[in-house]
Image (cartoon, rainbow, N blue to C red; front, side, top):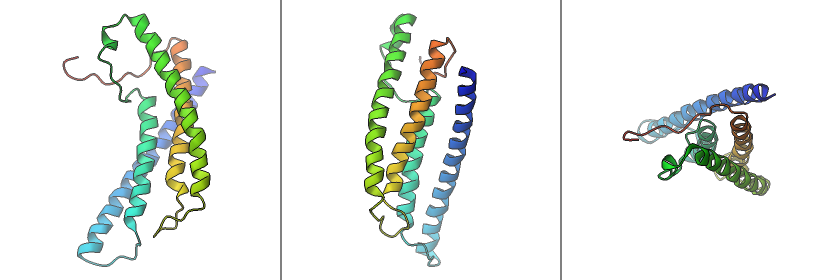
Length: 169
């Protein structure tokens, strides 16, 4: 069961990585088109910066969910490294459970933002204000799945990805 969940979320992770690659390519294309539009030829793209902002919001939220999955989320661990291993493990459970709780609350309220934003036009685009808000909601769903997987894998005794060590650690 755990292996099936892990494989399924691995597929989700790969899809999200491809989505991020496409968003980055889209951002590069939009920024390049703005340069061409300003200096050479007028292009028929109204408000390209608004599209770039939406893409950046999606990159931020989806990127954070993937960082948590891979153990790369930012946290202060000055004291953690000096604690005994059982205490470190207990703290990891506590942090994951706390993040899971907060993510569920944020996701619940994020859905309300999507509902409100659907009726609001994003000026100069064909998008509604629900698009940036939906990035928050989707990332919360993915983050809940990844956090549940982390908790289950840790309870099953599996090794999880850890944050990158910096020089001097």
